[in-house]
Length: 603
Image (tube, rainbow, N blue to C red; front, side, top):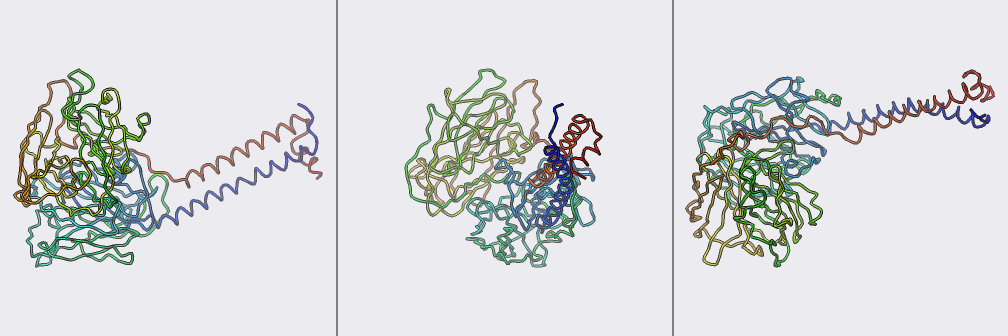
């Protein structure tokens, strides 16, 4: 090895000791960051945790945090719930396809077993919270033996002025003359700050039966927006028109719910990275609530500007069209676009076999980089259906979007080119919220799509659609439907008619109803599902094929990565410095390591 000058060797020695000094610096930085994370965990601590909307197969768990954090829930029938257990994310994350930080958290657990006890822990950011005793929370789903008969949907809807962009959670409870309260039902506000629920889904506090109510009973509505505060409104069941609330940042929640549905989180402890046994809200007994398996497919009531013409562009008709492969095993047909607004649209089709469906879309035909899944799917699980209903949201008004259908293992285009749709502009003064409800009976009930077109003497509306839940129930928002040219909201009266068409694999039905006759009634239609005689195993039920397991990886923050990188760099520096010292002193001059260091430093 060539001779190394003394000054350079001195530099090597100094650098070596600098590298050595970086070890405690890096370790100290690591613990400082961990301490910062521990202090920050108090802001991510779940508060006012509630259980609502429980059915025999689903439940909603909601809470708020002082600062923005990702929200998720792990659950299992095993008390040792933890890594490897199914994970469900916030309903809004399921819709958007990415995890976002929020101060309100709303997680729906689906595909649960009837009459079964479940254990769960709450995830907020990278931390896990349990009850004040360090045990998982628990709830028991409703049993078939409880009052689960179909009730006439009794819609209540309103708006939260500062609850736009799906930022508020709205709870409703009914109180009778004896002071008995129903267990709260709940819903997220939509992009326009509107909400809708059905009072007929309210249950008694002990979940034993449907809650009997009349128009004279008190109805308590509570809106909660995390950092936006909250608001409470008391009215009667019979006086529910024009419900409007504005949340106050200084509002403090009171015990307005049955039993202990509003529970605060206990003390704070530093969590471990994988499964920190954080303290959290004391467990409450949940209540049976509306079977809201998915957020309703309602049209957001948007604010807007002026009107302008625009069109849906395509080379061939989107309806009644057979595309793609010619084999019986895997084809699609009846591709249609519905629910067109200034920032969203829905694609519907039928597949010849039960299979997953999605669309790849983008603002350029050669850059379809975004993916939208079926409205019944989640971020971590994908179902298989005959009828596919995919809504693309958060788009730009007056913009053209291109998309390709992915159904099963095949892709489908429009005569070799991507489909395309041009969205309209935003309109001023959205009309009052209005909806209808119904139920599909028969074997096709769980896997059906329902379409609606309003007809008047002056013309027909654009087509809207929705999906059924596992019991065949559906709700359709009609208040903000547009005309066929999409240039304005469609004007109609209660004396006008609506054509309701329902479709499942191998069967469809269409009936015309006068709006006034179904305003307080339920539309009932029957469909028979015709499954192909193949070797494929088919499961009935809207959510039968949704996997009960999800991602097993907790979200990680940049803080974790910074700490790991600091330690890794320190180790590399020490190793490199050691290599230099050994090379220079042991091999360069033949001196012992100790003597070489002392000589070079003139000691």
